Image 1 (cartoon, helix red, strand yellow):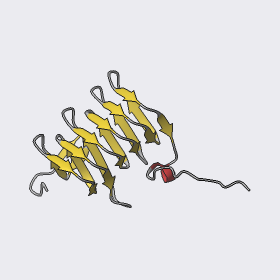
Image 2 (image 1 turned 180 degrees about the vertical axis):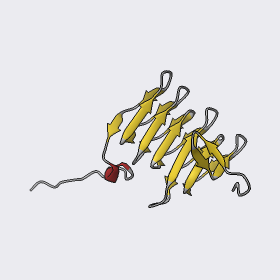
Image 3 (image 1 turned 90 degrees about the vertical axis):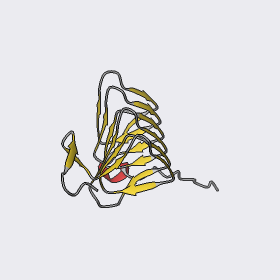
Length: 136
């Protein structure tokens, strides 16, 4: 998206920006750096095998599941997070959902209504399947 001047946020390159006046209804699949200032109503998923960083700005909001290796949150997220590498909850982060992580950093002021669930890298990207056993 930004071919002439590379833009970075906290050392991570931003390839795609969703501005404050943008609302997306539907799932979003991406690779590279995604910076969200607007709203997303749907899943946010990193392309398998690709480097991906999601940054949710203070004014941003996501309502849906997130499956991204590196997740940096400073806005509102309603849904579960699956991060194979790292999750950062900045001071203004408001999360309603479970956070599945390998490494987590939570700053003073961040709120999480849900569970922090430590997992290894192989299982962090996929939601846990429920197994049903038959008795007999």
